[in-house]
Image (cartoon, rainbow, N blue to C red):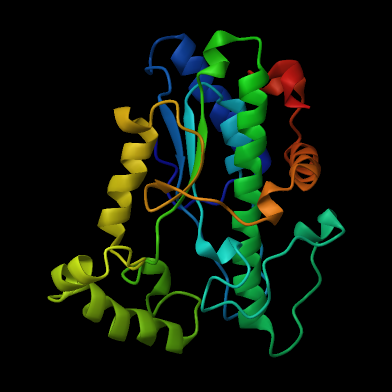
Length: 269
């Protein structure tokens, strides 16, 4: 297992990291990749627009060779999250995804959560487009590789809702003071029995799904969008192939990835 931790990775850092991994795999210092799990994240909700330089898209394409799994969220689907104030819809000008204007005063929290939702929209779109290219590849090996997006459900015990996180105090109180002890405490067995499709659960339960989907036999060959381990339909916008291709093309541009940078070769475009 290779752990990047919580370091913000610039595009060039990700490129160098991927090249080092590929070199060590060729030299048999590392085993071939079985899966890439895109899990760690940071967010800015209360304090307004902030930037990080992340590279999951670049890393997955440069290290294409194992199954790719990323986190989704109901926040990507307009109207599904109780924390949503502005719908998570792509702007007409996709460059606004990387060069947005500042938040208006008083809109910081709503816009922050909107950006979080849109980040999931883009990740899910990337998953669909990566699968489409892998399936069309002339390489038998690449055609066996799959990409999945998993919505783990609501995680009230998540560290991203802790008091030290950049979220409103009311969110922390709701998650840690009410939902966590109510649904994940002593009454958890009762709720699991009476409300089997309850979307609130612990991070440890979600982790089991993630690992199973990434390396488990039960999900071998599976691709697409899942909610709590079950196949489910993502939002209408994420399934719009025209928008998917537009986001894919822009992502290649922003990450500086060409035909020679990934095992997909000609199939990357």
